[in-house]
Image 1 (cartoon, rainbow, N blue to C red):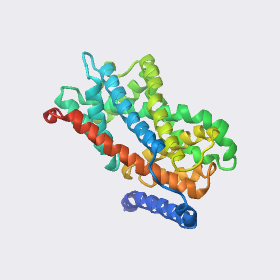
Image 2: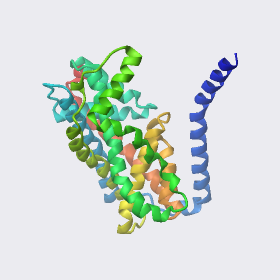
Image 3: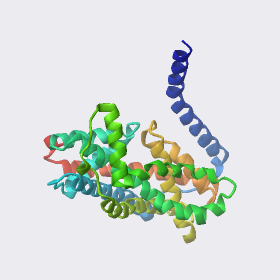
Image 4: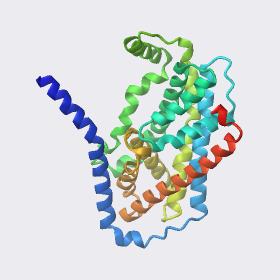
Length: 317
């Protein structure tokens, strides 16, 4: 009886916890906005060439990721020849589904397309895992050196802010073929009494080369944020790199908030918290809001790219 009550309480807490976290995020963000409202009003929020370049960088990040996802699936499946157009088309559709809480929409879109094209669910699932793991590790690879050198000097009293980087620890297994193969088969054996062929796992050397390639979309994302920031406030060239890393880290935290559509609000709170070390809190608030606005503009333009690439291919999707 007591065990049943404990499970019931646990389920209730699990249901309301996401709403509590979102509410707290909104509360602290709103409080910061209220305290700095007069200064926020003095910042001119006018689109210009820098913001346009920032939007193009954010778009390019998604398009490159689509090409790389297609490369992963081509390497996983023998005789697979997904072109870059299809890779970009399917990945862009999945990217736009991020506004549905969690990664389910993104995954199911690729799964639905792949099954129709004759790919196995296991291969498609692995391609999705590799894609997200490599993007996450690209964020870690770019961020860690900057956190340990530049950012650590600004946050010496609160390095726990960078705790989300620790998520990379258990995911290291994905980068090693034999380890990922054994762990995945152990899980499948327990859950479905099935095994997965080792052919559906990338070799370690293949992963190494792909990891280098996945640095490109992360760098484009960081560059996009810097261009957007410089369209609004004066930023010293020496602060470009830490600001780019702050945006990348905010993206990682937003990704972890799987119950929030596109990490809405969570990413902005992290940007304000960290970017305030390089600009005034009011400027950090405006830049975080502008980054969300321009990222949405980039997504709308990506939707247009998808419609163009998908023209005449409705039945293939």
